Length: 231
Image: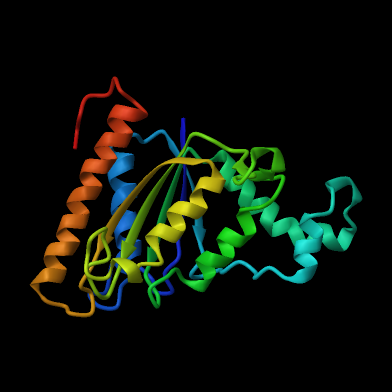
């Protein structure tokens, strides 16, 4: 059975009863989830709403705790790392990490950065060995897929685009995800939200079409190659 860790990071909600102010990134993730379940209903979803319940920021005491061997941790240190342990356990169980997030100030929301800081953890998701030379960090997890669904107010953040150098969202997440065992990374982006014109409509429709294709690629051909195409 496939396990998908679904994470939403937008501060905005997804309320299908209203027409305006809904989170685009959440709506894209919801589309992915519904399309996936239409093909592979025997899938376990683990859900985290970082916009609603942001993780704690790390602190000096937290850093000291994570560098303390488990058998030597004090009760206070165990309490400090309890959330991190819980979040890491969810990552470990996941075959796919479905992550939806808006671009805030050309990067990720603070809640999402806090999540990455909690789950990328020495001796839990990566180890450190100077015998590896200039690249001593290596993930202790492997074989995971990340699907990143993003929304942007502006446009041109793709490779070669007019705002490529301003994109500190997708590239940051792709690099960080390597230390969670992610070996295949897919990003689908909806742009032009602040313009609200036909370009935005076209970009959103294109993102939804890409999601349809990606769900079929993953759910049908990679995870269940013997299921006939239904999308």
